[in-house]
Length: 239
Ligand code: UDP
Image (cartoon, rainbow, N blue to C red; front, side, top):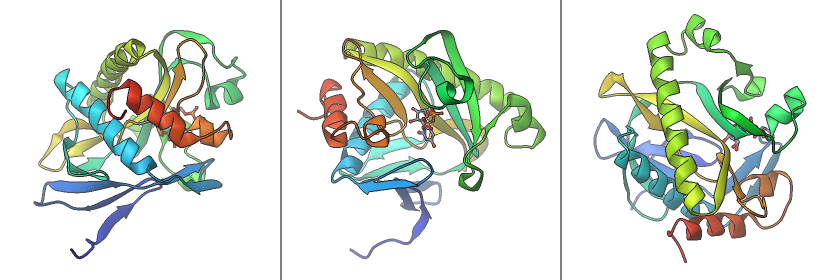
């Protein structure tokens, strides 16, 4: 089969045309990057694991009535998704302090937050994805007030579903990054897009606090594939 033209190439995924004008195919690659691509490595089968973990989470969220871009998994590396216009913001939800919030604000790593914290980062590698406020989103036209309200609501609901789901598997959902888009078939409809996987979440074993996410690669803590396989296995995806 001829290779399809790549419409978008990201750090860990590619997008190619789908079977009709309102769909795309999202392809999961084995590349892992950190610190704005300063660190880069290929991990054989990471893309397959993330494809399956993200499918599992998208299906869970769909069952909880959260609209997503996900249609179906096609094979080990590919998903059929609804085409959308991505809002150029990384929406981060935190339950426990770790990562950039600790270095930026001097907060102790591992501090349990009293309530979920919502943050917004502009998706712009050349600026190192700066943190921005809700007011910036509105003022610079990245999202309308109504869209932000909807996204905040959806983010908190996603957080609630995922905290409970991971808790049952002995995993603490420390934080995660999500992206949203406007459906190309209906610009007024906001859906969860991109992926949710150990690349975009911090997942700690409940008891030992062992990291089961991309921090294993960022901080050189061991074998990334073992960590992702552990998550997949606890979710009942691979054995
Ligand atoms: N994150 C992500 N992509 C990014 C930046 C962050 O998926 O470009 C995720 C990261 O894996 C973590 C959460 O968002 O689960 C919060 O990341 P943080 O702001 O602490 O930044 P980092 O530690 O990645 O610099």
